[in-house]
Length: 294
Image (cartoon, rainbow, N blue to C red; front, side, top):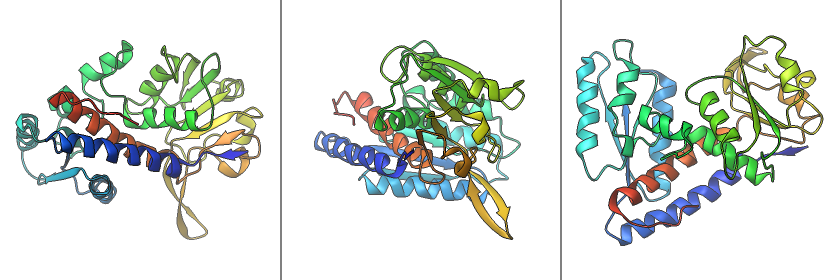
């Protein structure tokens, strides 16, 4: 069994992104990612802080805007429009979830598609489905890179994605069955209400677990030698202590899998690295500067 080291692969991506930042700066372009937070969720505050630190690490400008939780929804929409109009901002990420009185779908529609480095604007979703993505969503793209790092080529293989979210499950399926490098798999999308889920996952060469249910995928649900990608990050109480687990029962499944991602240290670092990747790509395209993306 091989642990797929997301930290190591993410470090390679960040190094390549840092080179791209230097190329852009030499051409007078200072790539910048703007994060926007309208929430008092501690986890969201942590995620935004980590993303800003990531920007600093690769030499990219990080801009953060807090919008008061009690402000009218229009204040958030206006903030996004100001960032859309700012030529010195190349990527925009609105941290989800936002407060209840804000329309999440309107938020996603409000971001300029050319600056939508999450890849969630309807135009960018459509381009992904059509096989011509502007930005691949960060987590699914990161998973593609992890598979490649483990010398796992999806072409011709059976892949099962467990989870149907707009953020991971749906775009992951599109990338796996799409044409081109990292795709061409026969792909099935399952979820928590799939009848006899194990009959699907057991036939898979590649299992991507993204259901958001702690340790949902157990050893009896995977075949010998399968590649298992665990997207889940769940906090559970064990022996009176809080601990992080994935959507996969790691201890059980690792004994059967050919390769598996740990939690933490698997998919998570890649999601952040691919956000930086998308931002430098956006900066290059917006200013017509050719860069050598990692």
